[in-house]
Picture 1 (cartoon, rainbow, N blue to C red):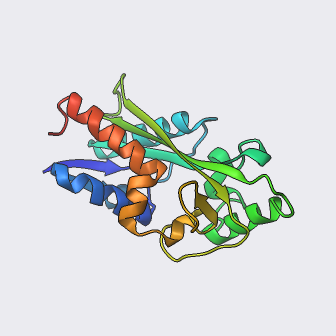
Picture 2 (picture 1 turned 60 degrees about the horizontal axis):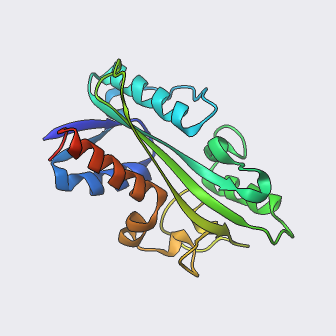
Length: 199
């Protein structure tokens, strides 16, 4: 069994990655199992932050690591909340506080186009000079209120371009196929296969 550490404390992400990687004989381990601390995300882009997190997890655990940096870009807000999506309503903010702040920021606004972005980084070890970097997006719009109990983050207010319901009303299978993270993970799996890391 290949073991890879996921550089995240997010249970939703851990579940998504575990489900998608199980078919390839890969066990995804939470960084919390190794007492890996959160690392300051000092990058100015999703790519920089994902590399910072993957390197930190690989350094402390001695395992290969996958890190994801993702967020929501809203066109009317010039790409905000962007890399600050998880802390849009302040450090330690709850998911609901973040999306309520976003709904407030768009109040009365008809231009509501947005997309989720995901950058995944795979590092064989902490000094890996050529990490695998994959990026994918998921287009949609921001709804006017929250719906649905599945998913996490901004899912209850994000309406995917191909649907009338929120991302939080989709089944896990549907979401894995459509989402930015699902698409980035397919790219990552393909790259890992090409490089002989998994088969």
